[in-house]
Image 1 (cartoon, helix red, strand yellow):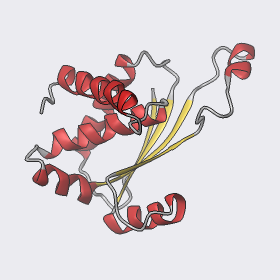
Image 2 (cartoon, one colour; image 1 turned 30 degrees about the horizontal axis):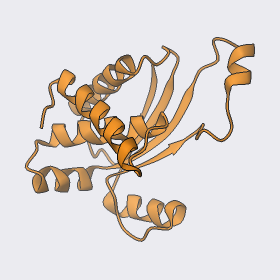
Image 3 (cartoon, rainbow, N blue to C red; image 1 turned 90 degrees about the vertical axis):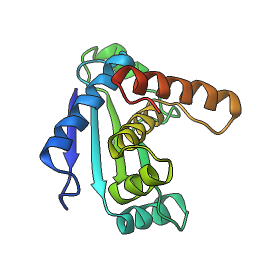
Image 4 (cartoon, rainbow, N blue to C red; image 1 turned 90 degrees about the horizontal axis):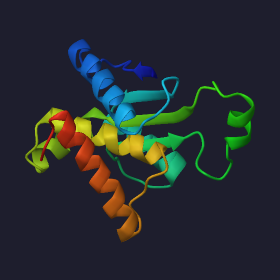
Length: 156
């Protein structure tokens, strides 16, 4: 796993940053992702994620996580992967608002870690093509998400 964490405003401490690396690796293992899979996570303020959401999603509000997938299913990398078997797979970028995660943890009466884990796993699933727009897609995605979180020890 190749994980880049951008925490420029020191929104999470080093202990939690190490924990983030652990849950990302756990999620990658559960999804059977290749060892050379790449991902970046940006921890941002509520104002910054609002700005990103407005600019790139045309939604004028803050949210907990925004995912930007490199391969969103429209342009397949299958041909390149067949030619270069060890080609690293770059999933894309997650932007996570620590403030919104904290608000959600309080709203849903979860620990901060449970909510942060939920947000990270949710974002990684989106980057891997899972979605929850249709009820049948939601059932699959949320079921897998809860399975990963429970196995990690972050039950509801």
